[in-house]
Length: 143
Image (cartoon, rainbow, N blue to C red; front, side, top):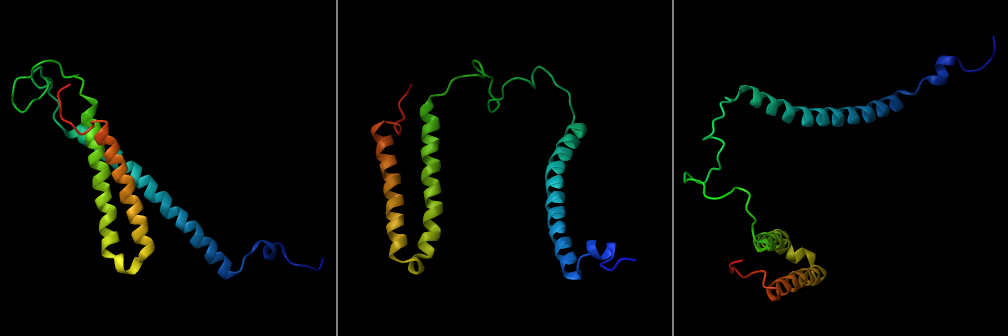
């Protein structure tokens, strides 16, 4: 017999190291389970809904629905790009209020630095608004 550590002693870890490795692996197992459930649940629910819903298509059901009125013209019409630009401007200024509210609540704790940053932020938004105004994006004229 040779003197030295046995084969099992070379590959064994201490109890605390084993618990750390187990906790590390468990965290990945939890993430994997949530990824699988987060992917499988919507797929199963959509498939189940498709299987359970009634499916009796008719010519009347496949027409374009316009609030109970008879459809006039084609359903694939071209909208003026100003509608999209106007909606985008609304989203930008709506998000601004989301940033302003927490800033206003914590203003006393943030100090002068936060005030300067908020003035810069609002200034950039005003530059964008002035630019859009000069480009006449905000006018509701016909095409």
